[in-house]
Length: 345
Ligand code: FA5
Image 1: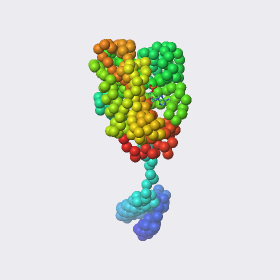
Image 2: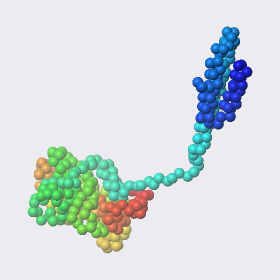
Image 3: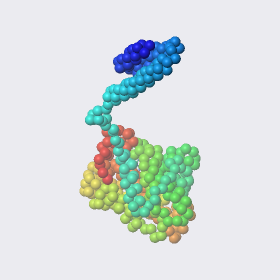
Image 4: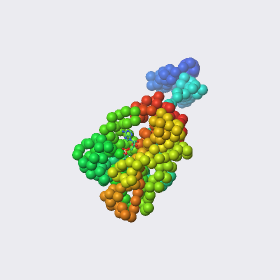
């Protein structure tokens, strides 16, 4: 019996040694140590042994069983380790291969112009204000000294939603809203935002475009303050050698009103195709806030004064970057947008 046991042990050890997979190893374990295996059979036959032989044989069977279990466990760990190693080798990554390039976008030229103008005015102590794009007729027109039926309403053809509600035609309603909210306090704001007009789209006009409104109210605010502020704007956007020119104009909400031109960046004022031979290019409308507008918003027009301006953001961007058609800003053509990748300031 002892002989038989030794032989079984040798056989099992040889099969464990030869096993190349965990499944094969498990088959060996079941075959030799399982309930129906030969070692269990040997144990069952121990009843036939003499009283002296029985404990000797029992101890021997246990030793063989423990030995086989240990060898099986060690082999199983080795096979597992080999499997992991093989998988790691199969899945290894070549870190020297060139990576897939991620395309990085860049700021839209209009956003860039607006942020630059915001930076300038914030550095001069202005706050940035916002107002709704769907606006009341009252703020878009009436509170700006444009009562219903006023002929100057024709200057801004509008998209009406109802009799009293429209898409704002300019950012000027934010003037009226801010004055109303500040209740007589001094104001220094700019407000960039979308505006909408029933203009026919062409190279320089769009039915939707961006404006940047400016409003300053306080003691003794004068026309010269407006001029100095706009001069700083022109120099920041177009260079230190740029001049500005104020031409008389008309807006119902400012008095006096002006249209502001900047000296042509291409010819420096001599006259060329960009400035239509005049040496100047119009960039915005501005003026001193009309006393009626101040009074309607609760300010005492005898005590305080103010100036306001409305810049066309596309106009500035077209001049700054030499863009010949306003529609390029809206079509999202990567060939156009990627040109602004490296242009600074
Ligand atoms: C106004 O909208 C006044 N609210 C500006 C203002 C504000 C005057 C505060 C006084 C005080 P105007 O309609 O001129 O003004 O428009 C201002 C600028 O917006 C123009 O100089 C132009 O640059 C731009 N603009 C006007 N219409 C269009 C359009 N259809 N497409 C693109 N830009 C436009």
